[in-house]
Length: 279
Image (cartoon, rainbow, N blue to C red; front, side):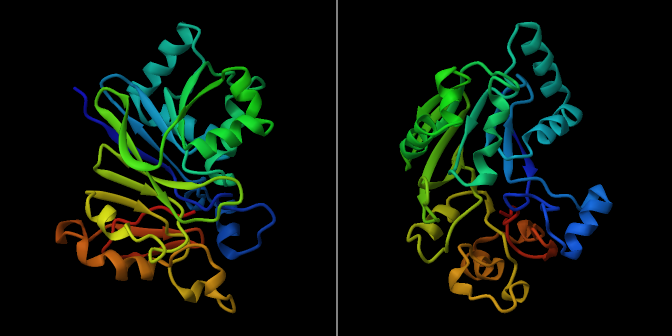
């Protein structure tokens, strides 16, 4: 059948956990035990009946995330072997990108000539993101060698087909735009993925878009101000989870109120929201 699964491949901040050079207790815990490790932010849409996959955001940890998928899914593993037997080195069938911050696209280097040497993977991204990848090395080599085939996608909330039974809609959201704009991605108008946003109040459509989806994976970088002693909260380009709960908590159905949130500093308490990713 055409049913889909969504795998959360990483829920850590851009650089994951442990972070290079960090000496926080949570970083040491992650170094000492794999259960505390967090990989970079990414999800994967998977069709069990065909083995097809769409990778949303390509984190620096994409090699480990691909390995975990091979270990967890027989259909994904079979598709991988079929691709290799047909001289197809593509680790995933399609890619979609939210923006050009390290944790969300830097893993693209693994699709290039020195690594997987992928073949024309359709890569959905905003026109700004496409222009950035085309104009800046080393990403421009991926385009030149046709490791990826850019699919400019307008961030207007309209759905585009990835394959029969799977659509994406890009929603423009406010976030630091040093290089490109940032989008949240709607999957089949059912699941909403927004790994990064400056604040909910800066996005007038926030409540209506969140309300329209059954499942929301939302920015949960910091749980509360208690994690940021001495920091000016106005300089933090992420909403606190406590603010997210206040904004959307009343939209959560009672049977869904056992979802847990997490952040890069460790596990947060169980809370009545579908917020699950951190970045």
